[in-house]
Image (cartoon, rainbow, N blue to C red; front, side):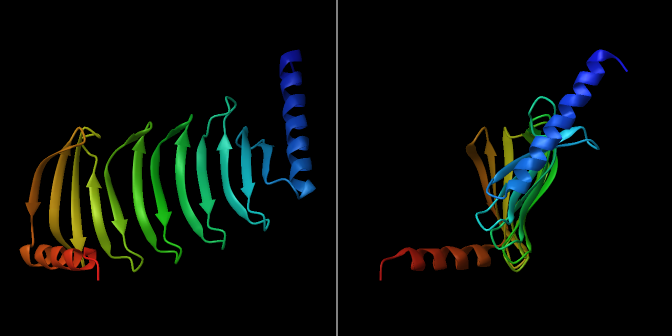
Amino acid sequence: MSNFASIVLKMKKLLFIVGLALTIEGSAQITKAFDFQCACTVVTNRYDSGKKSSEYHENSDGKKDGLETVWYAEGGKQYERNWSNGKLDGTGIHYHRNGNVYYEEQYEKGNKTGVWKFHDEAGDLMQTIDYSHGTSKEVHAYYHAGVKFFEQTLSNGKMVSEAVHNQDIYDQLKSEAETNGKPQ
């Protein structure tokens, strides 16, 4: 083994021992430990209760790389998403407190892509945002009880078109919003 490789191995072992010591200390809220399997640093954050609040991996450059998981204080998963060299990459899933999927996101090298789907706490589809054409053109579709009733297209953040797909649902929800928005 070369002298350089020997030094690197000793440094990795030292980082692992320091990370382990921080983990054992108990009062630390953030711990870092080198993981030899992924050749990365695992960063763990904890709530005051001691439960994990988040965990992610950092590459040798200190950038997020791999799976990131965040939990609610009660212990349920808040979201999971993937990183590649400091940029979001791949599919992520966010959860309601009851455990049902809130929304699904997709990134490619830090850019939003694909169709993002948003659900209410019961699991019903509420909205989709289509980033298939990049963020310069977004198509927002709105659903009620699983039925698409309205769609908006934005180009570079500006509204370019709107379309009502179900007039009855659109009118009902608009009326409810106007009624609920007026002071009593």
